[in-house]
Structure formats: structure tokens, C-alpha cells
Length: 297
Image 1 (tube, helix red, strand yellow):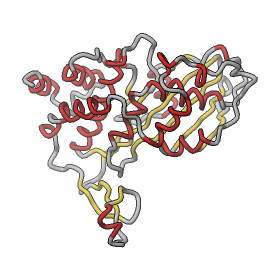
Image 2 (cartoon, rainbow, N blue to C red):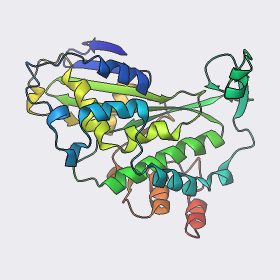
Image 3 (cartoon, helix red, strand yellow):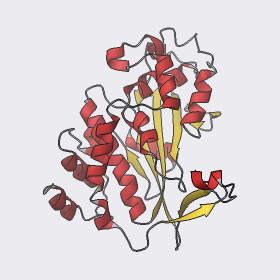
């Protein structure tokens, strides 16, 4: 975990937490980081009702290591169902796999055989096109679980669609909130450009309510803020504020709240179409053809 207090802008202070992966986040939390008791006097990560915050904090932390399985079978089915469309948009110049010594996924038969280049990762034949996708965990209180679920399905398929077109994709989840002139920024890497997409690993941060209301709230409670955040956990930030904080490149994408992406949580095909359209991806995908195809399913 990397932590930094940024006061480069005189009008604000930013408390930055960057976790290299979910294991890094797990390792941080099991060490029970000290709570900022002067500010956070009522701990939402512990005291939150299970109806709104999900399983208790110890179980929520275990999900980071053991996996979150609630309704995952349906999620995997919907990902596969919508993902059946992706081959219609693949470029000839798509990603290739190469064996490597490090920086990829272990190929178990080669590990067992003691082969030194026992990992696999993505590579490309031409100059790579790189995109980072920033997935905003927090949502307004009125967003339904179905909308959150379908946003996760759509995001997984967006990564796959982009990779089919030859892009190298980074995937990060984040929470960025503010109170008066203080910001808390928490970023977790889910996928680097040369890694395989692990759907089960992405599922918990994208769909599990515990991830925000237990896990990320617990990180916030350890932040050395000085304003009185204890009355709440700050307000969310706008898309423009996010762009400024992460210094997005032209093609980088922000996955915001489902209602901003016109995701209704009903028909997954309609939600996928609206999702791509809301992200202004007409230049990448023929959305009219996509909608025509999925309506026949």
C-alpha cells in the first residue's frame, strides 16, 4: 500500500491510498490500522446495519481473500451471455499470448515441470493502444442492486471488447470523496495491461455492498483527516473532478453511477447498449448493429 498526503494545491488536502491489488488491501486491513478516533467516533464499517452494509466487517475482509460468491453464478452467466457479441467487433490485429518469466498468470503444468518461462501474458504485434478504466464504487442511495449488478456485467464485457480490438486495458476501482477542503482518494488495481481479466476477482468490488460500506469505509476511518468527517463519510465527486485527480488520457474511461450510464437494471442487453452509448464509444463499436443483434437474443 502506498499512502501520501498531497498539499500541492493550497486550497485542498488529499489523503491518497493506492493498493496494488485486493491482497494488498487485505494485508492492510488485517493489521488493524489505527482508527482516527478524534474524527470518526461512530464507525460505519462496524456499526452499519447488515441490511444496508452487508456481512460484518471480519467477513467482509475475508471476502477479499476468499472471494465473494453471492449470486456470482448469475453474474458469470450474464457476462457470458452479453459477451457472445464481442467477436463481431474484433480487429484482425488483436491481442496475442506469450510465455514469460514474470508479469503474467502461472501456467500450472509448466510450473509443475519446472519450466522457467511458466507464465503467460498478453502482447501485441503492433504499437499498443492503452486504456485505463476507472470504476467508481460509490453510488447514490437510490440506486438498486440490479443496476449495480448490470453495471458490473457491462464493465467486464467492455474490458473484453476493448481487448478484442487490440487495446491494452488497465482496470482500477476507486472511491473519491470530500469534506470541506479535504479529499480521501482510495484506488485499487484490479487488472494491469498484461494480466488476464479475472472475473471472480472483479465481482466483489463491483457488486458487493460490503466493499464500500465495510472495506472502504474502514480505510477512510484510518485516514489522518482533521475536519469533522465523523458526521458522515464525505460527498462523492463529479466526473470532472475525477478527470482532474487522475489526469485521464484522451481515451481513458470513467465508469460512474448506473443512472448516469442509463443502466436501469432490467434487460442486460438494453443496459449494455446504453452503457456503451453513454461512454461515447460510437467510434469503437457499431452500436446500432449491436442493439439489433442483442434484440434477437
